[in-house]
Image 1 (cartoon, rainbow, N blue to C red):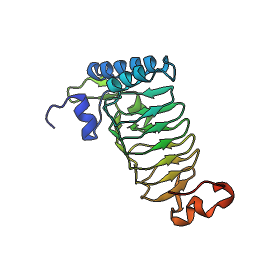
Image 2 (cartoon, one colour; image 1 turned 180 degrees about the horizontal axis):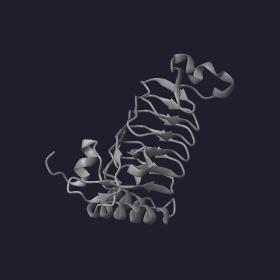
Image 3 (cartoon, rainbow, N blue to C red; image 1 turned 90 degrees about the horizontal axis):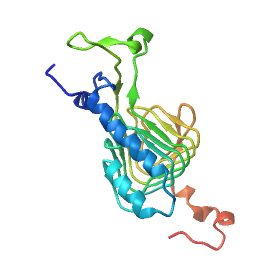
Image 4 (cartoon, rainbow, N blue to C red; image 1 turned 60 degrees about the horizontal axis):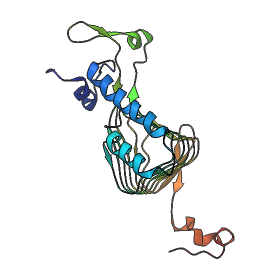
Length: 214
């Protein structure tokens, strides 16, 4: 294999050293921006927007993150327009994390991309191509479609793809792909059923009250 920077190794899906100086610098910058954001008041919208513009790789218009937030790299995350995240959003974006438009996350949602060797001795140390002993891990990207709703405490694991218009139930741990228009829940999460017009609020008049569906 030709020489690759550690960040290029992440994209290639091979082992990389998270202690690499370049990667540590990216993470330190992100962690400091996390802290700066978490020190703001909710109504300091301009200040928050400025911080997010520096922190997140790509962020669509009309995003709101309640805070506190915890991005590991920040630069590896892309978020579409009209994004809402409640308290304690955590995105460990060693590999790329892509979130579509109009997604809403309840409190305590966590997205993780890194994976570690299962064998304890390999987790502790391995040799790189030059024989240097280092701690290493690898990572798999996470992709989330448009118009998704995640309940409180959802965890999305490395390498997962979630289609558009999905609802993920509170407390779920998503370990496998979820097709579009699905309601999924559980540990590990599984597809409970397809979301259809039968789920419309128009079929719940007691809850709809004097409101109406557009």
